[in-house]
Image (cartoon, rainbow, N blue to C red; front, side, top):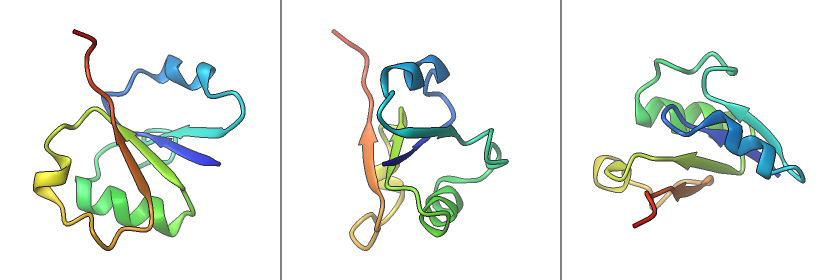
Length: 77
């Protein structure tokens, strides 16, 4: 599975996803893209999952028609 780590997601997390191909938005040259542009670029590049810490993403973007799965990471309580 091809996984994209959004800005704000700790890059060392990739070491726990050893069975997947993991790239960061910065590695892809997408560090400055807005959420909508990032989602389009990730889908066009064939990413399956976006890991993000942006809890407002679902309120900022229409995710209904997206082909990419989005996982929003939270802080442990």
